[in-house]
Image (cartoon, rainbow over all chains, first blue to last red; front, side, top):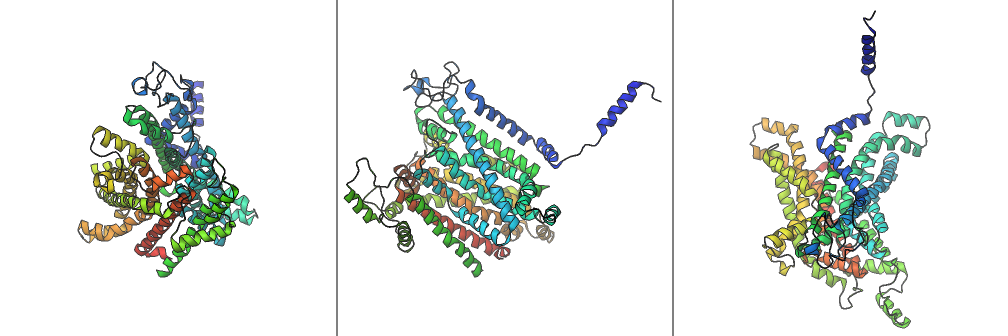
Length: 308
Length: 307
């Protein structure tokens, strides 16, 4: 029937390719995200910053705690950024290498943001889903508690806690964790109110699934889209919070550092002609924040059902 | 309306109590008392001092006394660090300063932010709109502790126009930089929120009707569009207020203006618990009160809220 085997093969191949592939909602969202140039650019920037934070110290000549005695005391003259002496970003006021300090600061700042965001996702989503699912008086009491906690100026309470229980990264995580879940709980509750009236939840109730299983199996997975968006947008906010506290000198303590602490140190030294101590940390700080904002925005456009 | 206000008050009052109790318990659970020093005091002296400050009482009684003093007498007790000053003295000294630049920052953030947002929305997709959008995105990542150093770098070190710090009784050139540092990022957020809600309102049906009737543009904007468009902005003012109060800490530290933020951080380093607590409570009460005002305004503008 066919003139030759070649054509038959081609036809067969074409038939296989033309087979319609199922498109999941996640794939749709991924396509939408990839079309957004700003978001993709920001994502690439973010990956580069992640590589910098994780592996940046591999190419560092100086360790972040090492003091370069040769230039100490003459930072303004000898500590400027140079490839030759290994201080790519220059040296700080004690003669430590600013490059490896920036790597370390970026790492800690991002870590604080991500950990806080994870706490927010876990606690906030479950809290909001439980409140929204049960509704009625339970909902009322749970959300009233959130309202009350939200009305408290948390930065001050956080500083109070850091003073009382000692300044440590662990306390910082606890404090930031305490603040960060509130918004997430509200968002998750709002979405849950929507979802719990859908047929599949009704079906689960009708077949006798226990409430907590419904929440974990049926509600939480459907919240994920919006939760991911807000978690991404939460990270820069938390980085700002941490930097704020470290800027005041109450957050991350020496020998650890964070971008906020580095900016604070750089800002304190800028009148001595060592301006690189400010602009390298500041550059990474701003770029990281922008990247998270744009990725979050892109994710919101891709995932948030409100805008579809 | 009155029952709405009563309901909001019914939430606000326990919130303040919770805040006071939380901070008191936090303070009480701190390891080491305020009078533990390098050289231990003789037990009799220590007992006398603790009796003077009421620290020998059971916890619940201390809390009740503290709450009573704060609520009824506005008395936050003595400073633990400076024997000759009370917390009230510290607040009386720092608070007017904070209030001055905070007030101006708030006025400028709201005034400029709202005007910019409305102008950008009315000239949608013009150079003004792009400028406003660019500004709001840029300022989002420029919080006050980044603005502070940049401002000092430009205006004090490069241009030499403005003094780099101090207060000098609130002379105008000492106020400018704190106000800019504090207001910029909130101005940007307000402009962004106002712009997007104004765009939404201007595209809605009732505005089209008003235009079809042939109303002049400024009348449409002022009489019809402004009120609904400002609702989201209004609800943002609560968080903005909290942010500015918090930001005042950085401004005080950075520009040495001598507001409560400076005392707050100094006491945080000195473990002067009563001052920290006093300021925390003061700020908390202010915040809650401000949110209350915003809520009431909101209900006044949008009757649907009163439910």
